[in-house]
Image (cartoon, rainbow over all chains, first blue to last red; front, top):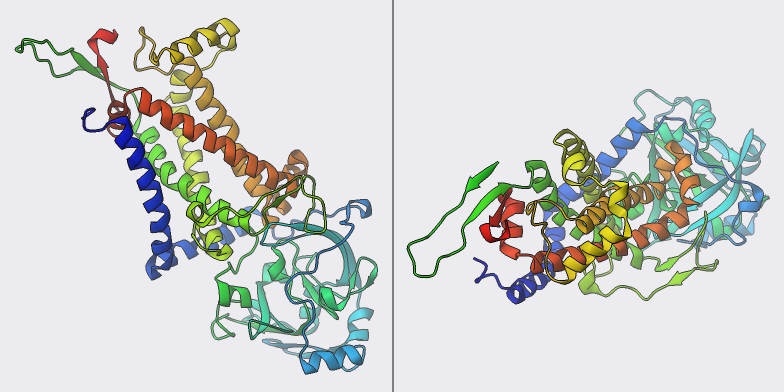
Length: 253
Length: 248
């Protein structure tokens, strides 16, 4: 055996094996059943984290002197739809945040309504799926009490955020479960770094869901909808990036 | 647990007698081959994930608006999984196999405590690290002698140091720096961020850990080739290591 398996042929074999294994991963990644297995990792991490992490365990909060000097803008930085352009021109005077779906008392809140609600201010780290992080300060009412105000029904399981921005020709949206929806740091933020939230960062309102990656923090939130299932909502995967690129719905990792 | 190997005394040229010794426990063998697949995929998909933001920072935060300590060009497609730019699929690969790798290491470690792989085969004593002993083992490596004549199936000193550093150093480092990048796990283990100096430091250490691991794998493969390839591969499949009588 040792004569058949010389060092040179072994080296060549290992190289060829590695190269074909790499190429094989591309093939496997396009196979529907293999994808199903790979994509099951999302649910496994979700259930593991829900089991291991206390529902109200807080994301790390930072001191003012630990903030990023400049906070990177990412994703949509200006939804130039006619409707949004009009809202910006009117300084969001006619903008309304709709809270509906599986609730007993649907809400339609003006920006002053949202700003007059008891607000929480937190300095947290924003982690992009790409790998970078920025630390900023966010101010806004907690989502939980707003959902209670609307009378969330027992059959509601997810909260969907419909946004004003269009990405790849499709409206942006995101969704989270009720654990994150009622988490004490989950905010509908109207303020950032001590100022009114800018258009670049999601004016007038951006979701903060601090234990997940950046793409879950929907900007330009127009409507908050309580649903029983994510099936049938846009592409059915719970978010625009989940639908168009295959990102994980649970972005806690 | 030595078994008598095949002998052949009939020919004019006497072949060396040899015997087999049970060297690698089942848990070790299964873990080894599972890891071959898992770590291969974790490296390829990890390089793809790195390509999404090929800059590294120290501290809690770091983005294009901050100063990286390292910026690299993107790794070429032949090194990454998938081979074309696809962060979402790379994450699917990476996060699926991170579970296999992480829990695999946990099961292997528990098994290795129970089957005394750690306390027996890989035991390192402080006196082992004496420069004279290290020098002796380095010299025997350089002269192509990898096995202790008194214990030919055992692990030599450099081997034990290398395996111990990987098992108790680099591999746990990869897992903990990986967990420290998870915003969900940060909430559960905020101390981990303090320990590692922040999320971007954790990301940098994850990258450094990767290349230490690649270095270990390169040396590991080179030594497998130099120290009897077929015997090594067979022993990692069947568990049995062949000792030639003339080595005893």
